[in-house]
View 1 (cartoon, helix red, strand yellow):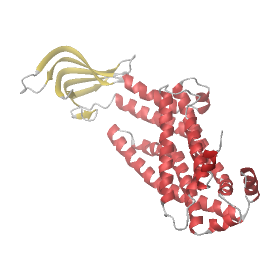
View 2: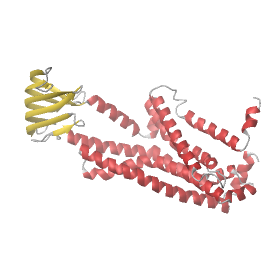
View 3: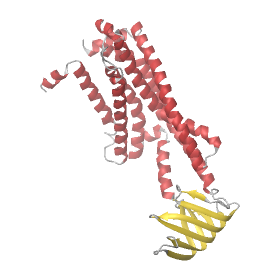
Amino acid sequence: MHVSSAIKQALKLQNSILAKYLIRNVLMLTAGVFIVIGLVIFGNQLVLVIKESLEEGIPIADLLPLVSFKMIRDVPLILSLSLFLAIILAVSKSYKDSEAIVMNSLGIGDKHLMVFIQPVVMIILIFILFLTTVAVPWSKQQRSMIMDRSENASEFSFIKEGEFQEFKGGELVFYASKVKEVEGESTQNMEEVFIYTLANGQPIITLATQAQKYTDTKTKSVYLRLKDGARYHGFPSTANKKILNFDQYDLQIIDGEKRHNINTTIKTESKPTLELIFSSKVGEIAEWQWRLSQPVSVFILSIFAIMLGKTSPRGGKNLGVLAGVLVFILYNNALLMAKSSLERGEISPLVGLWWVHLLVLFIIFMFYAYRHGKLSQLIRKPF
């Protein structure tokens, strides 16, 4: 049976009991798989956000929004995987229960099943398209605003009076006996300052009678301006210790250039999709191609899932699911690699991420030909 005639026949049977039965199974399995995977991933996200908030001093009131925004970010990937595995499980179940064998005897094969599930696939595809092009960029923008607000709030008030505090993962230990806020300015004045840092594995101890915390307006780097003090390289007991006395010394706490690069990346990810589409920057081209690639992959994977779910009654129960997980991981990793290559300018925007989809479609075509015994005919056919 030719593909066109099979599609026409499948469209006629779209409202049949068989089609509705398959759609119902796919929907139920998609919901079940999504709940299981979602509980694992969202639970892990909750723990990570709480840990991050404790380390960076994020207010408790911002915890729930941050968790929600991260959940929105992960929904497209989880939903895509859930639908893919659900189709494999639904088709596999029909073969295990010999239902598919009966359908095959009636002339209903893979091409028909691919058409039967399209209403579900299209609904989920449109929903994922909305998430990747609208909801996810908005959630990243909102999360960035919360993180910036928390960072800016703590940037000029994280130094506490009379307490030893660790920064940069313990690489910097700070103590000030007195801390005074300067009204109307984003600075702090401190007295009797002690600073312990590591440079190339060597300890450096800095003592100063006075210090002032300020931000460079050009570079946005945060500094401590130390006055009347000394820097000790190495411990006093070591033979190669060095002592440097100074009247004034500026110690960088936060690198403004690194923070700018991070904010630039976040800004690109949170830009509206229409704005990115008309951009000529490779980073922004890679971003909008990535956003569109996720819903495109849903359609392609739905076709692949039909063939992966086709097993014999005596076949391995979980072989199709394991193969599906492997295919999904490889597919998404290939898209991420293509996105990174495009951002670095290693491939043309015309090629972009599309070559990954074309490669997967070619693999599906070859797999289909192999399963139906047509691969040898294609190889022998002269061009």
